[in-house]
Image (cartoon, rainbow, N blue to C red; front, side, top):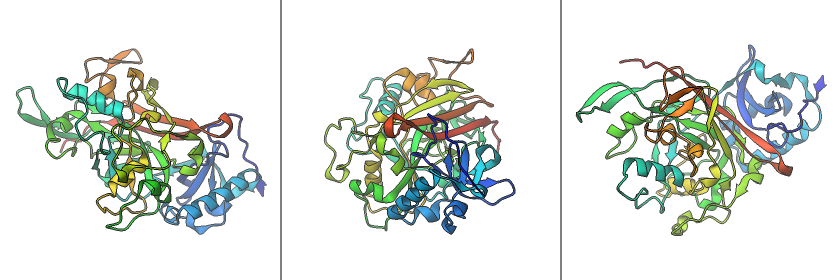
Amino acid sequence: MKKRIEVRPGSLYGPDNLPYCVFAPAQGNYRVGARLADSVIDLAVALDDPVFAQPSLNAFMAQGPRRWHAARDRLRTLVDGEILAEAVHLLTEVTLALPVQIGDYVDFYASIDHATNLGRLFRPDSEPLLPNWRHLPVGYHGRSGTVVVSGTGITRPCGQRRTDSGTPDFGPTRRLDIEAELGFLVGVGSELGTPIGADEFAEHVFGVALVNDWSARDIQAWEYQPLGPFLGKSFATSLSPWVTPLAALESAHIPLPEQTPEPLPYLRETEKWGLDIDLTITWNGQPVSYPPYSRMYWSPAQMLAHLTANGAATRTGDLYASGTISGPARQQRGSFIELSWGGIEPVPVNGQLRTFLEDGDEVVITATAPGPAGMRLGLGEVRGRILPAAQP
């Protein structure tokens, strides 16, 4: 028996989107699916392809761009008609999992507005941007083992914090924060010693997913000099279950903001990989910020080129994220340290004035992008609720 999936006019998840996920139907095994409207299509059944009968996207992503486009074309044709009924599951009746087995994780710092805001907060008497910032995409290596799927509870981390006396104590962070980001998933890896050029981006990156890179600001402030982020960043990174393929974002391509000075040759790209993506951050059900990805200074192609410029290898399932996405206006800031300006300008949330996250708080980040013919595409969501600290 076959059925047609009804798509309401204006749906964010119509046939021009078709983001991928890993899901399990009731009493079934995890496998790869694609979303259409409020349904998930079992691709192993619908396309009769065993590569999708696996509990991650890795095997499919490793097959490369030609295979990605062929499968998408088949799926796009299929959803215009009727689909085997046993391949269609209501979204409300499935369980979503981490869509990719994560290899390595790298987090960048590619928003000029975010970097400027933090520079003004931390170095009020100095130039906000450090001398290297306009010359290279600044980044650091995170922990892939603490990347969790959206909806996973986030335990408040403990660590050393500097006290008013200047000496440290140990305990739960008092300045727990978010970072609203866009993540990029490597499909085809690269060999050790072989850099990836900026114009080879689409040959290696499969798609994008929303990221919340949680941050303990007080722990980070004490520990990050001289080697950079460590326990203040490594305790949890939330990833959306929905992976939007690059092919779905063709209408979202825009030029990058002007880069001054001109990047060094290895960072120059022929195709501009600016992306017109609009995010919304909701705090306990109330929208508090609307970061624009279109303002990002460094492109994902430049990030990947820099990540591999020293010959570092990449693997299927590697994740790298943009860093906090912020705009120039207060209501466009992608972290609460910016939104509350270091805690001195509280944010109204459901009638309360708030600065950083309290136990029980829930943050949800969503995003949309332009699609064909003026439509909008949904990039899913990434959500997390704060759980009390577990003292060692």
